[in-house]
Each structure stands twice: as C-alpha cells, then as structure tokens.
Amino acid sequence: AGVCFDIFGGMVAGLNVFSLLFTLFLYFKGKYFPSTPDAGSTGDFVFDFFWGTELYPRLGHALWSIGWDLKLFTNCRWGMMYWGLSVMSYAAKQYELEGTVAASMLVSCVTQ
Image 1 (tube, rainbow, N blue to C red):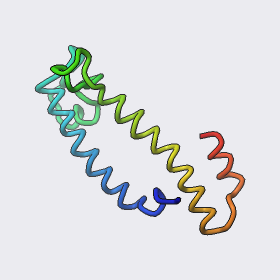
Image 2 (cartoon, one colour; image 1 turned 120 degrees about the vertical axis):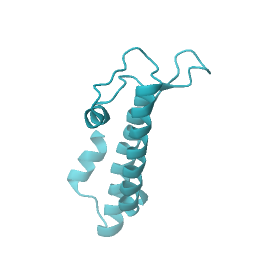
Image 3 (cartoon, rainbow, N blue to C red; image 1 turned 90 degrees about the horizontal axis):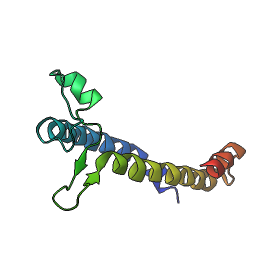
Image 4 (cartoon, rainbow, N blue to C red; image 1 turned 90 degrees about the vertical axis):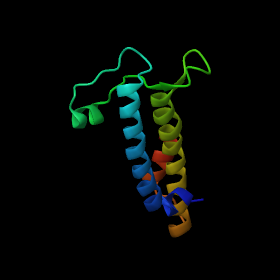
C-alpha cells in the first residue's frame, strides 16, 4: 500500500523522459508514415511537435484492419488506470503515516 506515493518522484521523472521520446516517435511517424489521411504538417517543428501531426495515430495495420489506437491506449489505459490507483495508494499512505484517512481523502476515493 502506498507504492505510488513512495516512488512518485522517480515515476514522474521516468514518465517525462518516456513521454518526450514517445512524442518524438509520434511526430516522425505522423510526418513520414501517417496511418490515416487526417495527418498534416505546417513545416514548423515546434508547432507540429506540440500540436501533433496525426489526429488518431495507429500502429499495426499489417496485423489487423484498424490497427492499435495509440491515443486511446495512452489516455485511457495508462492515464485512467493510474488515476484510480494513485488515489487509493495515497489514501493507504495517509493511513499508514497518520493512522486515519481524512474526510477529503475519503471523498476523493469514493468519487474516483
């Protein structure tokens, strides 16, 4: 219990490095190997890097017809899973440190 809280600093640092490398991958994938016709580039690297070159980046078209939706995977699988796990982990850590869980933390746990 409280694992997410205990490794939060290292996890944030690691995820920032991963996200930078992943967005570079998506930039070059969208620019040179777009998966759908909604891809485009303005020619400005900074703008395209932050705005994106593909609306719905996908991988794996050779394996199945629609491919693997990378935006859905990163936003829904990783982001939404961590959101719920982190709140429970922080509540467990608060209980471990203080012997009780604050009412505001309980509300957060119940509503998440």
